[in-house]
Length: 266
View (cartoon, helix red, strand yellow):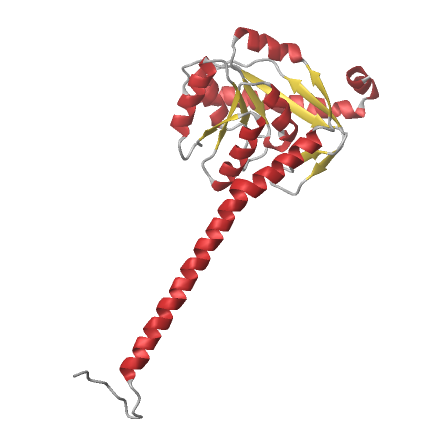
């Protein structure tokens, strides 16, 4: 025989507790379903919608750029000597290179294993890049090994020296380690647009405006020895940083010199 517990007012307390438990379970179940739906939607955005929309914007905008190359002989000299080279660029200026350097196939780039990295990876892969997933904090050693193997079969490497979060213009150790580990030369790769949008980001990210003149300039190849102590490593890292800073400044000055503009663009 079932026993019911009534309180002073004659209310069945067991029934109340059972009802509360059922309501609590239903609420939790609803929350779990909502969270799963949000995750699926976010995954869909990052995997499908944003990469495709971003790719379309990049392609359409890039088609309008009036690009001229400077000192291309320095790039060619390095490629002739070493099939694999490392194109080193600031994060602030890499936008024109997304489509341009996809013409330098086969080409690869290291991209972090984050959710944002997954989105970027899909975009560059569609453009013809070979994304290698990894970063200094996650999967870095494996990424370096894969880059080295790709370099042996003629792959070039695109590398953002101060990404993904800065400090702006500071060459991080990753670039030097890639060059040291693979034996490939670093080619400082400078991009500068005459007319551009500047975003309010940590590095004042720049996107050339439609039909803007754009310069892509190649610095002299820089080689790294296989063995270096900490002091030599830092000296080399700082030297690359200084070369890139100087080249960016000089390239930007072209837009204030009509004679240099005419020499490049006619």
